[in-house]
Length: 250
Image (cartoon, rainbow, N blue to C red; front, side, top):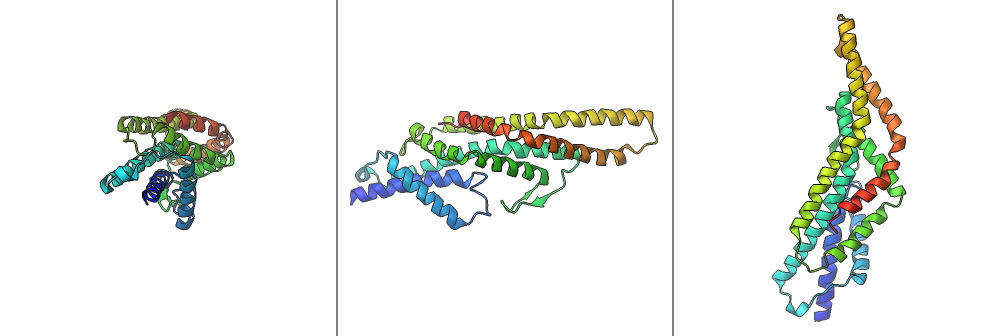
Protein backbone atom coordinates (compact mmCIF):
# COMPACT_ATOMS: atom_id res chain seq x y z
CA UNK A 1 0.00 0.00 0.00
CA UNK A 2 2.79 2.40 0.92
CA UNK A 3 4.57 1.61 -2.35
CA UNK A 4 1.46 2.50 -4.35
CA UNK A 5 1.06 5.77 -2.44
CA UNK A 6 4.73 6.57 -3.07
CA UNK A 7 4.36 5.92 -6.81
CA UNK A 8 1.16 7.97 -6.96
CA UNK A 9 2.75 10.89 -5.10
CA UNK A 10 5.78 10.76 -7.37
CA UNK A 11 3.56 10.79 -10.46
CA UNK A 12 1.57 13.76 -9.14
CA UNK A 13 4.78 15.68 -8.44
CA UNK A 14 6.10 15.05 -11.95
CA UNK A 15 2.73 15.95 -13.46
CA UNK A 16 2.63 19.19 -11.47
CA UNK A 17 6.04 20.37 -12.69
CA UNK A 18 5.31 19.46 -16.30
CA UNK A 19 1.85 21.06 -16.22
CA UNK A 20 3.13 24.29 -14.68
CA UNK A 21 5.91 24.44 -17.27
CA UNK A 22 3.80 23.83 -20.37
CA UNK A 23 0.83 25.95 -19.34
CA UNK A 24 2.86 29.18 -19.55
CA UNK A 25 4.72 28.38 -22.77
CA UNK A 26 3.73 30.50 -25.80
CA UNK A 27 2.81 27.46 -27.92
CA UNK A 28 1.31 24.88 -25.59
CA UNK A 29 -0.43 27.51 -23.51
CA UNK A 30 -2.51 28.80 -26.42
CA UNK A 31 -6.27 28.71 -25.91
CA UNK A 32 -6.73 27.45 -29.47
CA UNK A 33 -5.33 24.05 -28.44
CA UNK A 34 -8.12 21.89 -26.98
CA UNK A 35 -7.89 21.19 -23.28
CA UNK A 36 -8.18 17.44 -23.83
CA UNK A 37 -5.08 17.46 -26.01
CA UNK A 38 -3.15 19.47 -23.41
CA UNK A 39 -4.18 17.13 -20.61
CA UNK A 40 -3.39 14.01 -22.63
CA UNK A 41 0.02 15.36 -23.62
CA UNK A 42 0.91 16.31 -20.04
CA UNK A 43 -0.22 12.97 -18.63
CA UNK A 44 1.80 11.03 -21.23
CA UNK A 45 4.89 13.12 -20.52
CA UNK A 46 4.38 12.71 -16.78
CA UNK A 47 4.16 8.92 -17.16
CA UNK A 48 7.35 8.91 -19.22
CA UNK A 49 9.37 11.13 -16.87
CA UNK A 50 8.07 9.41 -13.73
CA UNK A 51 9.44 6.11 -15.09
CA UNK A 52 12.92 7.46 -15.83
CA UNK A 53 13.24 10.03 -13.02
CA UNK A 54 14.38 8.86 -9.58
CA UNK A 55 12.01 10.02 -6.85
CA UNK A 56 13.67 9.71 -3.43
CA UNK A 57 10.45 9.55 -1.41
CA UNK A 58 9.43 7.56 1.62
CA UNK A 59 5.65 7.44 1.75
CA UNK A 60 5.67 6.24 5.34
CA UNK A 61 7.41 9.42 6.55
CA UNK A 62 5.49 11.99 4.48
CA UNK A 63 2.41 13.58 6.00
CA UNK A 64 -0.43 15.18 4.08
CA UNK A 65 0.93 18.68 4.73
CA UNK A 66 4.39 17.70 3.52
CA UNK A 67 2.87 16.19 0.36
CA UNK A 68 1.07 19.46 -0.37
CA UNK A 69 4.32 21.38 0.14
CA UNK A 70 6.18 19.03 -2.20
CA UNK A 71 3.58 19.57 -4.90
CA UNK A 72 3.83 23.34 -4.36
CA UNK A 73 7.61 23.11 -4.78
CA UNK A 74 7.18 21.31 -8.10
CA UNK A 75 4.73 23.97 -9.29
CA UNK A 76 7.27 26.67 -8.38
CA UNK A 77 10.00 24.97 -10.41
CA UNK A 78 7.73 24.48 -13.41
CA UNK A 79 6.45 28.05 -13.41
CA UNK A 80 9.98 29.49 -13.13
CA UNK A 81 11.27 27.40 -16.03
CA UNK A 82 8.22 28.25 -18.12
CA UNK A 83 8.59 31.98 -17.45
CA UNK A 84 12.22 31.90 -18.60
CA UNK A 85 11.26 30.21 -21.86
CA UNK A 86 8.31 32.59 -22.36
CA UNK A 87 10.47 35.69 -21.87
CA UNK A 88 12.97 34.48 -24.46
CA UNK A 89 10.19 33.85 -26.96
CA UNK A 90 8.65 37.27 -26.27
CA UNK A 91 11.74 39.04 -27.65
CA UNK A 92 10.44 38.76 -31.23
CA UNK A 93 7.01 40.16 -30.33
CA UNK A 94 8.69 42.92 -28.32
CA UNK A 95 10.76 43.96 -31.35
CA UNK A 96 7.59 43.95 -33.44
CA UNK A 97 5.90 46.33 -31.02
CA UNK A 98 8.87 48.70 -31.21
CA UNK A 99 8.58 48.74 -34.99
CA UNK A 100 4.82 49.30 -34.82
CA UNK A 101 5.29 52.35 -32.63
CA UNK A 102 7.75 53.80 -35.13
CA UNK A 103 5.28 53.13 -37.93
CA UNK A 104 2.49 54.89 -36.05
CA UNK A 105 0.47 51.70 -35.59
CA UNK A 106 0.58 51.58 -31.79
CA UNK A 107 -3.22 51.79 -31.59
CA UNK A 108 -3.79 49.05 -34.18
CA UNK A 109 -5.05 45.94 -32.41
CA UNK A 110 -6.47 42.59 -33.45
CA UNK A 111 -7.98 39.67 -31.61
CA UNK A 112 -5.36 36.95 -31.61
CA UNK A 113 -7.24 33.70 -32.34
CA UNK A 114 -4.45 31.61 -30.81
CA UNK A 115 -4.32 33.26 -27.39
CA UNK A 116 -7.75 34.90 -27.30
CA UNK A 117 -6.20 38.23 -26.29
CA UNK A 118 -5.77 41.58 -28.01
CA UNK A 119 -2.44 41.98 -29.76
CA UNK A 120 -0.68 44.08 -32.36
CA UNK A 121 -0.78 42.59 -35.89
CA UNK A 122 2.90 43.00 -36.77
CA UNK A 123 4.19 41.63 -33.46
CA UNK A 124 1.85 38.63 -33.69
CA UNK A 125 2.96 37.97 -37.27
CA UNK A 126 6.65 37.98 -36.37
CA UNK A 127 6.04 35.77 -33.34
CA UNK A 128 4.06 33.21 -35.34
CA UNK A 129 6.72 33.06 -38.06
CA UNK A 130 9.46 32.61 -35.46
CA UNK A 131 7.54 29.86 -33.65
CA UNK A 132 6.90 28.00 -36.91
CA UNK A 133 10.61 28.13 -37.76
CA UNK A 134 11.53 27.13 -34.21
CA UNK A 135 9.25 24.08 -34.25
CA UNK A 136 10.36 23.12 -37.77
CA UNK A 137 13.93 23.00 -36.43
CA UNK A 138 12.80 20.50 -33.73
CA UNK A 139 12.83 23.22 -31.11
CA UNK A 140 10.11 21.39 -29.19
CA UNK A 141 12.75 18.80 -28.29
CA UNK A 142 14.42 21.57 -26.31
CA UNK A 143 11.39 21.73 -24.02
CA UNK A 144 11.75 18.05 -23.19
CA UNK A 145 15.46 18.55 -22.58
CA UNK A 146 14.65 21.40 -20.19
CA UNK A 147 12.36 19.16 -18.13
CA UNK A 148 14.95 16.38 -18.10
CA UNK A 149 17.75 18.75 -17.00
CA UNK A 150 15.54 20.31 -14.36
CA UNK A 151 15.36 17.01 -12.47
CA UNK A 152 19.16 16.86 -12.45
CA UNK A 153 19.48 20.36 -11.00
CA UNK A 154 16.34 20.30 -8.82
CA UNK A 155 15.47 16.71 -7.88
CA UNK A 156 11.92 15.92 -6.94
CA UNK A 157 11.28 16.58 -3.27
CA UNK A 158 13.99 19.26 -2.92
CA UNK A 159 13.33 22.71 -1.52
CA UNK A 160 12.97 25.49 -4.10
CA UNK A 161 16.15 27.53 -4.50
CA UNK A 162 14.32 30.83 -4.86
CA UNK A 163 17.45 32.99 -5.47
CA UNK A 164 18.53 30.77 -8.37
CA UNK A 165 15.06 30.68 -9.90
CA UNK A 166 14.52 34.42 -9.46
CA UNK A 167 17.92 35.17 -10.96
CA UNK A 168 17.07 33.08 -14.04
CA UNK A 169 13.72 34.85 -14.51
CA UNK A 170 15.31 38.31 -14.09
CA UNK A 171 18.09 37.50 -16.56
CA UNK A 172 15.52 36.19 -19.04
CA UNK A 173 13.54 39.43 -18.75
CA UNK A 174 16.69 41.46 -19.33
CA UNK A 175 17.62 39.30 -22.31
CA UNK A 176 14.14 39.84 -23.76
CA UNK A 177 14.61 43.62 -23.70
CA UNK A 178 18.18 43.51 -25.06
CA UNK A 179 17.48 41.00 -27.83
CA UNK A 180 14.27 42.81 -28.80
CA UNK A 181 16.18 46.07 -29.17
CA UNK A 182 18.89 44.32 -31.18
CA UNK A 183 16.32 42.88 -33.57
CA UNK A 184 14.64 46.25 -34.02
CA UNK A 185 17.91 48.23 -34.24
CA UNK A 186 18.24 48.21 -38.09
CA UNK A 187 14.66 49.37 -38.46
CA UNK A 188 15.10 52.04 -35.80
CA UNK A 189 18.12 53.32 -37.76
CA UNK A 190 16.03 53.44 -40.95
CA UNK A 191 13.28 55.39 -39.19
CA UNK A 192 15.86 57.77 -37.73
CA UNK A 193 17.22 58.41 -41.23
CA UNK A 194 13.67 59.01 -42.45
CA UNK A 195 13.06 61.55 -39.69
CA UNK A 196 16.26 63.38 -40.66
CA UNK A 197 15.17 63.50 -44.31
CA UNK A 198 11.73 64.79 -43.33
CA UNK A 199 13.31 67.43 -41.08
CA UNK A 200 15.47 68.63 -43.99
CA UNK A 201 12.41 68.74 -46.25
CA UNK A 202 10.50 70.72 -43.64
CA UNK A 203 13.26 73.35 -43.66
CA UNK A 204 13.57 73.41 -47.44
CA UNK A 205 9.83 73.38 -48.19
CA UNK A 206 8.05 75.06 -45.24
CA UNK A 207 4.63 74.89 -46.89
CA UNK A 208 4.77 71.08 -47.05
CA UNK A 209 2.50 69.24 -44.59
CA UNK A 210 5.13 66.99 -43.01
CA UNK A 211 2.62 65.17 -40.79
CA UNK A 212 0.46 64.27 -43.77
CA UNK A 213 3.46 63.13 -45.80
CA UNK A 214 5.28 61.29 -42.98
CA UNK A 215 2.50 58.83 -42.11
CA UNK A 216 2.42 56.88 -45.39
CA UNK A 217 6.21 57.06 -45.62
CA UNK A 218 6.61 55.59 -42.14
CA UNK A 219 4.14 52.78 -42.82
CA UNK A 220 5.70 52.00 -46.19
CA UNK A 221 9.23 52.04 -44.79
CA UNK A 222 8.19 49.79 -41.93
CA UNK A 223 6.59 47.21 -44.22
CA UNK A 224 9.61 47.30 -46.53
CA UNK A 225 12.06 46.77 -43.65
CA UNK A 226 9.96 43.93 -42.24
CA UNK A 227 9.92 42.25 -45.66
CA UNK A 228 13.71 42.54 -45.80
CA UNK A 229 14.06 41.32 -42.21
CA UNK A 230 11.81 38.22 -42.46
CA UNK A 231 14.36 35.96 -44.24
CA UNK A 232 16.85 36.59 -41.43
CA UNK A 233 14.55 35.35 -38.65
CA UNK A 234 15.63 31.79 -39.39
CA UNK A 235 19.21 32.67 -38.46
CA UNK A 236 18.07 33.72 -34.99
CA UNK A 237 16.41 30.38 -34.18
CA UNK A 238 19.66 28.70 -33.15
CA UNK A 239 20.74 31.81 -31.27
CA UNK A 240 17.51 31.85 -29.28
CA UNK A 241 17.87 28.14 -28.51
CA UNK A 242 21.39 28.71 -27.15
CA UNK A 243 20.21 31.74 -25.24
CA UNK A 244 17.43 29.78 -23.63
CA UNK A 245 19.80 26.96 -22.67
CA UNK A 246 22.17 29.46 -21.02
CA UNK A 247 19.48 31.37 -19.13
CA UNK A 248 17.58 28.43 -17.72
CA UNK A 249 18.45 27.90 -14.04
CA UNK A 250 19.25 24.21 -14.49
